[in-house]
Image 1 (tube, rainbow, N blue to C red):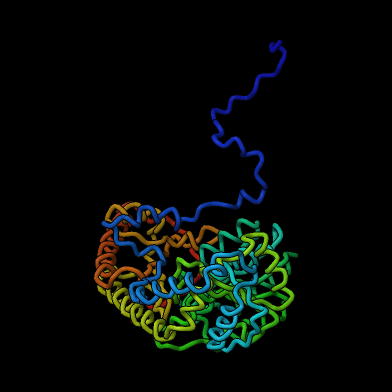
Image 2: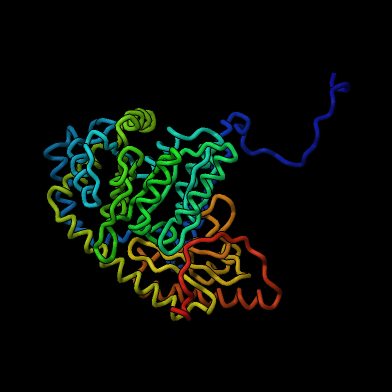
Length: 439
């Protein structure tokens, strides 16, 4: 009965996932980031991790917070533990508007949608605006979580270079001109203007109106992601892009960096019509964000000196930033350069020609130090001469030791390159500062 059937081709490969043919086409863009894959190794106690961006929560008043959580359960437990609105707790939305006012934003609580972290907001915005093949403009490098969302919805990312003053306006103009010439639909500019992740640079006040005007001229929406805005080391709050053009900017905010990341409370401030669709998207994704978590944040804001708490965080991170910059100056070999952040969590390092930071990473982990290689922050494979170093979580002593270990690995890589020849790495213009020996 089988002798006349054509033989099945033998490929020598076996599919371990019986559901492979059932997945939607967009799942092809869902891949694990290099950063997430690194966490399991970087979390080992013997490894100095300069890779992750975990906030340092040691300065939080845990005793006070513990008492407040008990009060919420005792006094409002039937509300806190019940389903809530996809829009978010009204009292918290009022407080969020007060926070954004520090950056010049005039907002109505009705236009705020509370999310499960700002990542949820970014994912919803991408879902609402991007069809497969649409173009998203983003800084090069850009936040790895954003790149994951754009890829999952099959959007194409076009990177625009930064310098020490942030996104370069002429680069943005040229990217938009080229997209229009090619007949591509650019849906939005995604930008992190303050203390950029991963680059550590800040968009200058002078450039902000120009960036807003360029996007307005080309009919391109702006997605302003601002988790670090209140963490400037000099206490300065920069004017939000949203404050310059409320009708064309969707603003993403978060309590993960200024309060507690584990509560996963963020928000989206959007133009009114967009807000309606965001609420519908939130309902389909989570039905409602956790009411209990929102009430914890709201009670904290109402009863605690949260501005004073942020000041403590800034002092904590400034000390760590100083330790990082001092160690880079002391240990890294000539030919390296790095950004000088005025706030936030990260320093962006460029290494000499011939060193591939992604290829070097396993050897760094063997030397008990971890970092995030630059390729994870580009959608197009660039960044092999860059790395992101995070100073937010380790102690200053651990930071110095980590940089010392990293420098030894880097010296070894440079010796190999000199002996066996350089590996040509693809690079893209990015944020740069003078090298250590010219500062």
